[in-house]
View 1 (cartoon, rainbow over the protein chains, first blue to last red):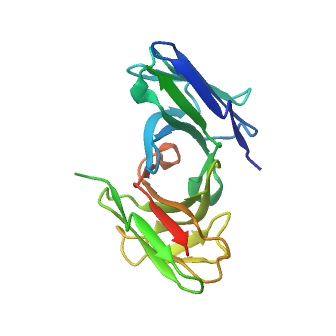
View 2 (view 1 turned 90 degrees about the horizontal axis):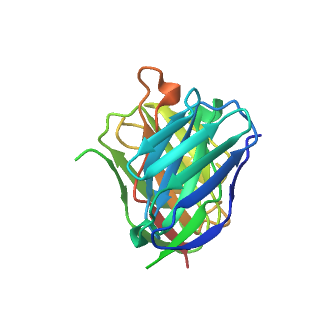
View 3 (view 1 turned 30 degrees about the vertical axis):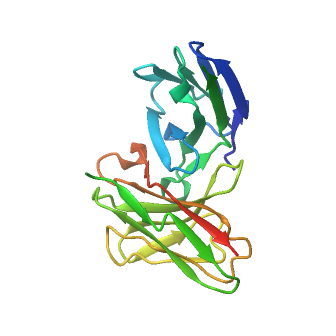
Length: 113
Length: 116
């Protein structure tokens, strides 16, 4: 059974510092991995999608890497801003259940001005 | 604007009542999903559908029911059999075209259900 873990559960950094968020998964047989942002009481906003054949994806200040063999992904957010404060979730797509997403518990990020 | 809408945003249920959460998408996506989110936990799959008039149970389907009469709509009913329904419910959809295993999922804004 696929399990996804995100460590740490919470993170607080001063504005301008780079953020590093970790995601690990137990079964490397994934189709892709998605990083999401969730603001309090809101839905999920997709940030980056990395296919299983890719090693990284970039969008603006965001960069996500994928090491499928070791079951790890890292989301880097450069030069953090207070507006980056949110919960970040990673999820892997697997073949079972209509390619459902299996989610980690999330990392709650606070960027202090 | 293309996207996924969920209604209502907040829903209150009395003990023993059934309630229905709405999910509509205009993305022309074939697959739709319902997830449940509890505080401090990741999302868990309740039901999913890949085609009209067909749906499958996810990991935590007990106490829930769905229908898929139209491609754009996938309502979720929380029945009285669901013992702990207070949670945040999220609907998602995904295209099933091309190499569809690799397509991303898009999410709606969610419905917060509270049992009184």
